[in-house]
Amino acid sequence: MNDFGRSTLPYCSFVRPLEGRPRVGVGIETQVIDLTALAPDLVPQHAALFEDGSLDRFLAAGPSAWAEVRAALVAAVDTCPTEPVSAVELVLPFAVADYVDFYASEHHATNLGRMFRPDGEALMPNWKHLPVGYHGRPAPSLPRGRRCGARPGRSAGPTGSGSVRANVSTSRLRSASSSVQVHRWVAP
Image 1 (cartoon, rainbow, N blue to C red):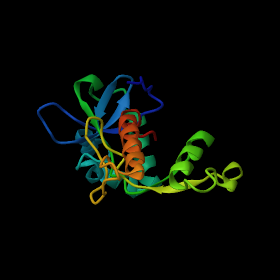
Image 2: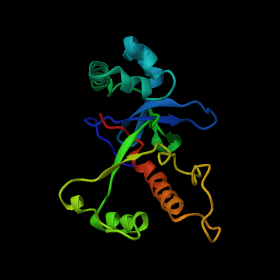
Image 3: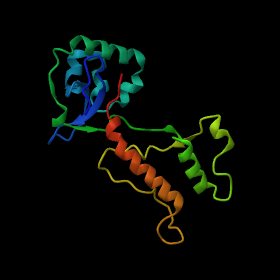
Image 4: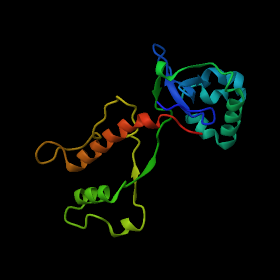
């Protein structure tokens, strides 16, 4: 867990033990402010954005709402009640609808190229001149501890152990799901 100072104030979603209902929070040092509880008094015009414990509505509200909420938080941060982050469980703060991913390195691009084009050139000629991205799926964005696997409909490979492409997908899902913990805070 990072210690976020008073100038950072990243947003998050969390669940208290035995409560089960997500809440929107704001990180400060090793504490969290319950924005879902404070919003009706702190930013009444935007309180409904935080009711469901997700950042989805807040992110959709746009820059003016973001600025107003941040200004109110900065002004009130020293008087807001907090609780230790260690006493709550951080959860995925928004629904991941879509994203574009890029090959991380020449090694990564070459290895995948060999799998996807076994009889062709492993590395595409444009890779060294232009970033090569691909359309991602939201499936890799799973909270820590949630199991994932190949999408339904995949058929087994010749040995019955799954296809090479399914194995690449599953490997990518595993690595992405373990990194979600690092990205659970959404910086302003």
